[in-house]
Length: 220
Image (cartoon, rainbow, N blue to C red; front, side, top):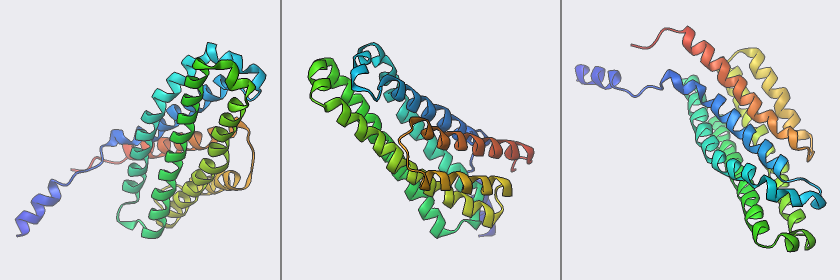
């Protein structure tokens, strides 16, 4: 039995070191998605005629968003693997739940942007004059700025709490995460560039994990 247990432990699936780049991939792809949509869909309905010239940007954003979501799931897995057996069930549940809600709302907002462009191709004048453009754009940005960013803030609070309690991450990273999380939770704004705070933070966390992971000797 002892030999069997040792064999099972030796054959246990381990997280590859290369998975540590997941947060960087997620941050870059998500920031690209937000920037492309913000540039392609101006807030002023009078400038909506430019959608016809920038539809490629929205198309690229729609293609990139699912890849960002996949990378985000890997990022969550890397964070949990980093904590290991010290992981707290309560905060882990909050971490996973808020992360999935953030991802779902980001997908919804991206889908609204894609639907808006597709509808604009059919009836451009009716979309602008009838108020559909303004409505769809406000729905999209309010989903991201007012709801998705709140879930991102909750995700960051759970991450910082787990990191500080288990010492799985540097103390400065946990404190910085708390500050950024408070900003996302408290500040109510429709500024499109606030959306870049969360992907930039994910890139930083992934870089820290990547550096510390490759400093350690590989597991046998």
